[in-house]
Length: 139
Image 1 (cartoon, rainbow, N blue to C red):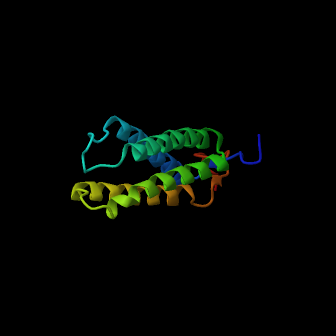
Image 2: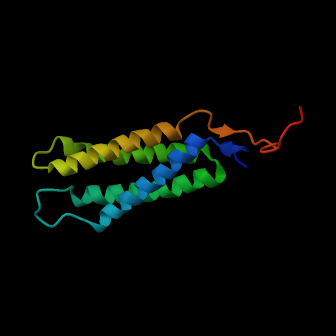
Image 3: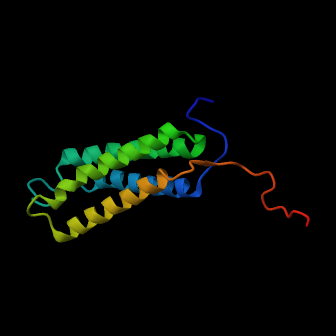
């Protein structure tokens, strides 16, 4: 066991954040299946779609490692990949010709990413396991 992997169980908020990160990572990858047509004004450039897909794959791998091994470095990696993916979506607010529905989707994506990062970074990271979980103590 290395220094970043610890005993105990993950905090409930951290688990929820990692599951949200997994879902967002899958959505990033799904974006590759729906590229914008050639010459279309609406939609991100193909390079941004590929970058988002790579960030999605990295998020999924790191979130699974974090969930299985309780590894803090993997959690930090999830935060970094989600931040970079959200950052790549910010130009949708400033580029002209982006449909309003796309701007709303990007805003929801960024808010969901911020919530995910906040949950994943919540303290305490680990909660000690209790041997007496569910047992009744005599009075």
